[in-house]
Length: 243
Length: 299
Image (cartoon, rainbow over the protein chains, first blue to last red):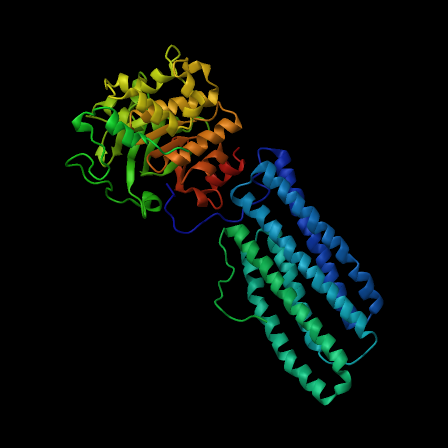
């Protein structure tokens, strides 16, 4: 009898091996997973487009990319509804329950990431053709890390890979550090060149958005750990002040 | 629910009990070891802050040469609801029938290992009739005695045990109140038990069990023949009874186990696969077999 083990040992299951007896239920869960992935892909595209529009000062592109946010919002509503349907009609338990409740929460964070990326687009449009290089390099680094965090969190969700999710959580500190370093740098630039305050404030705002996006990607990763292992790893890092 | 006349109190004033069958929970059988035995880690989950009302140790049950329970050690915490789940034929009904000596009633059936009630071995050497009064049972199909009135059905268990209640009227009332049936039947206690709906009949059978003042109530699929409303009433009743009785429920309905129980045991092919708190069992089971069964992936 295994009823006494202290640690839970249910590992990521091979999704190919264990189908539901009821194929239609299996299909519902599969389609829910695909919808979440599609929403994730839209959000990634939105974020990538926003960052590239900033780097190229391409206001047209920023405008185009920002329209993706509508689709992200619609997907959030659709996925919420699909989750409620499964909860009401299938009463999922165990790993299925963790998957459905995770999906419910994941879409909230994805939607927030979409909003923040849209905000970046708005700042890019405001910046217009201003070409000051202030902060551009740091923003590039922040964007690379943040995008890889989002991508890995989504991949971990698909693969049920708690290790990869854990690595995402650890990478958040890097983004926080880049933001913390950028802040005094921009303050110094603004002090010495008051004429760029307007631009620098917008760049700072973009950095702040990226830092928040990394936080949301961290949330996603924490949910994936819960989904796979049944362990809640949120708030496990003590009382550090983030961001 | 009306708490007037809880059977434990009503029983004391209503009829004389044999002196030897005192049921003070703090003083089980004289000389019996108290409650907990050598603590195997199998019940660490259940007994952390709990005493076991019953407990099986290496219980094996046979029908002829076929072994249907294969060495089950399971604590049954006092005044808690323990649900037993598992596919058909996994031995869950046989298991609870071992808890009140009903298994041996079947020709060719036998068991080995221990069944403990308040720490005392009850699977042999004691009067099975006395055990069945302390460990009552409610069956899958409501089975009121067809020729008896509602009133006589409530009293039937006592009479079969040779007990003569002093005040049968108040005993009948308190038992029927306890199962929330009183208001529905008080004006027709002389009617046949079969005149009631299925859900009412099942509550009547529970009242019949309660009238004998059991300490443990075994329920074998008590709602499988009932509609959702009647099921909800029985489930509410289980919640009510839990403060006074130790309950073991066998169910095919996983959601029911999740709704009513504190602890869940998953049986598969006569073995205990997993046992633990119900809240953990249905959110993060430890065993792949449990996971597959409760999510419906059992092939």
